[in-house]
Image (tube, rainbow over all chains, first blue to last red; front, top):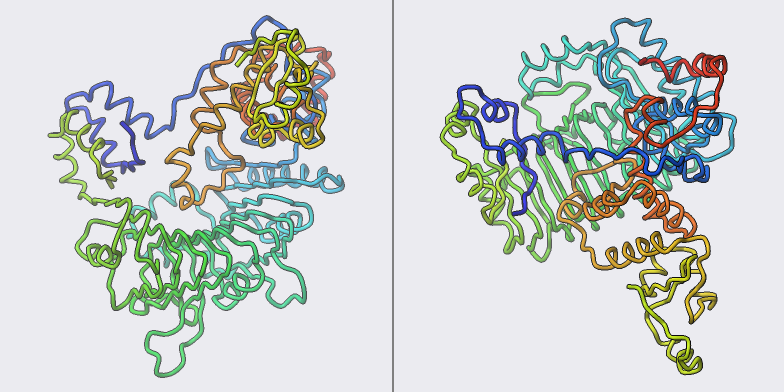
Length: 428
Length: 186
């Protein structure tokens, strides 16, 4: 039996593991646990015949091994293994700093952590070897603008590969964030994010060697549209999360400065636009125009007018991408798409209204390899838009209360029946 | 995959046939012969690709003195499995999931392939992959080794890999101070 990914919400998980439910059979449990935790980790047998095989490996090979450890700190700790290992980690072409597990308790502690990152970067800075990955994730506390700017410049100068920065700019400790998230409905959460009002900025330098860039900076990103020369020549994948951008700047960068861009993902992005010309009541929005783009994922973008997100103003998202193959969209704004080669469409939660969402030259042959839609009534309209769909994925949303009773009554056979049926079902 | 070759065969006819053959014969350090598809060998190993292109493939079995028969068998096995594997459904759909994982994760069959190896066989295969310039196989085997290290204390790592600690106590303390940032969690 083969599965498609099934997303279980917290509610469903609670239901499955609820005390007053009949205990789920081992098969169901194993299935749930694998779903939640990913495949179970294999235990390793300790060293075969007692010989030290790893120490004899060439430095290049050890670098590959250490680069795959989750953090640079873990790689650096191998220096105490034996003399042979003393400096091996310094040759690893990747730097990864992640402070993910627990929110740090004080600002002083955060400063220490940030200083540590800078210390390692400054040791790395003068060396000439190329760096293939830089990842910095500090999920809690405030990282000052100056440091963010320094890290971005370091990446622009040294990196030939992947850049991932996940840095908040507003003081959100775990409790505060959780409380705020629970109290504020998703659609209004945009107004809660204070960083949008703090006018914090991060200037993205031209990174010619960066192939993949993922930024979650909770700032307004400024792109180098006015610099005379250069481009993000190697950039194939770009992901922007939790940021504000100027619509014009982003359009210009995507159209003219990212000649190799294949993947673009925007999530929680506020796009600032100017007052629409008189007579155009729908107003301007964002136009994503790229000759190379193949995969596009847009989740919650807010088109702001003169610096404000209006409840009544939807804005317009235009996508003009001759090479686009897959498009995943979850937006409130109006939409116009030209994507003649589209073969995969994920139409998430947001309803489909043919008047507001215009699929112009989309999938010219009207044939999709895969279509994923929410099974609410307007979704039928989007299905009618295509003649053939090779694989249809319907997402059924079940209210938490009804879901609880459903899970109470479902026996294992029924679960198997669900998951094994010809049409894959995703539960939310 | 192992092929027994009689020595009495007519060299000439075999040489003619060799040019048209779509396999190459590799000889391990202990003299065993293995056959592998020419296409897969050229695609997966930069060293073999260079030898095939340069015509330095020996009809009687190209000598790979650095590689034992067990490791070479695994290499050949990997090449064959690689040729037969079809990308999993998960990989096809990942195009839209915007996976920015730093490395390409091993596929399920690759994971199983390295999981069944003994400790020594794993390291033999790493060395063979490195010697033959097989980037993907090297990635997959190194991934396995890094999984064996992940989340472990230095003592545990030494135990898993039989590494002998040749530092003095003072030296260890010195390193720990120099790299205090890395030992922060302890």
